[in-house]
Length: 306
Image (cartoon, rainbow, N blue to C red; front, side, top):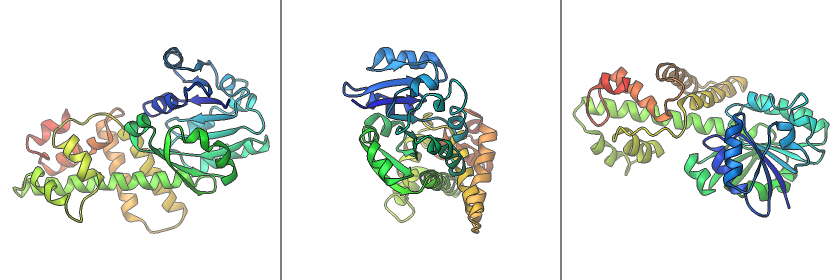
């Protein structure tokens, strides 16, 4: 029976962990808010623990899913940390949307103790996590991936080995930077069309059967922006973080990437304006405020402030 620990029961982590709470797995769960882990254990086939060290004790696989790589790194050291109890031969699978440099720092002390590490950020959102259909981008050793693949397959439908440690983080950051570009660019185009007298519904009907279509235009804008629903499924703060990682990657690789850098600046501005709890699609509100028109009609100032 695989012995698995899951650390980080957030919006994505909780449904991921549910897929591991099964009779043929021995699952321990930990969360910084202990009550969340206790509630999860009470509702599922799992055991709540109070420290990362307790979570990692005698585990074959430890899965982490936290906001940033620094959070994962902070769990390693000390008497309550993962390194205090994680056995040689175990593997840490980090599903955080993190940065490659920190993942490499995390991997080094683990390797000294004979512990494997994979950066394994996921894509597919809360719905993909709930359905167990996430795309998982893997950085690390292929043999290590083969050992833990049965665990990852519980929540991931498409598992892609991207390269050495940090490669998964890099690809996830660029993917999310493209998402950010699509959101901002679609918002700018639709605001301009609204001011020119073309309704967003008409514009999207054409765009979504033409070459300008994207997930943003086909799904996010019709379902969230035109309707003014703006459900909070993925925080703008986290997308800001991811775009910043992609922009830093471009700088590290010494490539000219003005669009990546500009997107990073724009989403940092939107994050600052809209706050920590805003959804990523709400960046469109900032574009509306700057352009003086609402996608779908209405009062730009009123919409941007709600």
